Length: 81
Image (cartoon, rainbow, N blue to C red; front, side):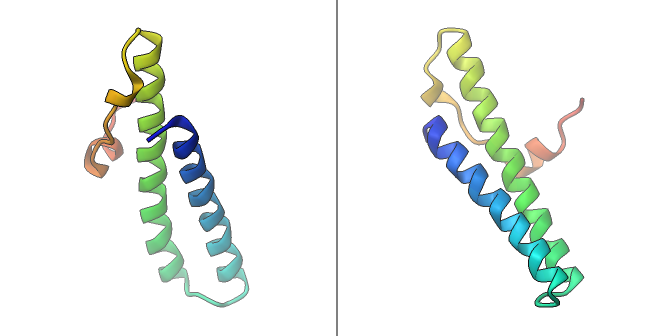
């Protein structure tokens, strides 16, 4: 996946987050529906950002960015700061 494709994916996920909040405000979905989907979207966003960071790091150190691999949701969600 290219950097542009990852950015497009991130933009799509963010747009869906905004859409969910709009639909909740309009009463089209319940809070529990919004919350469940937001959790999935946030994890997918974290994975996309992680992949983009990996690609940038590989490029910075003279490695092929295409060697970066998406990490599992569990790995990405349990990073320690």
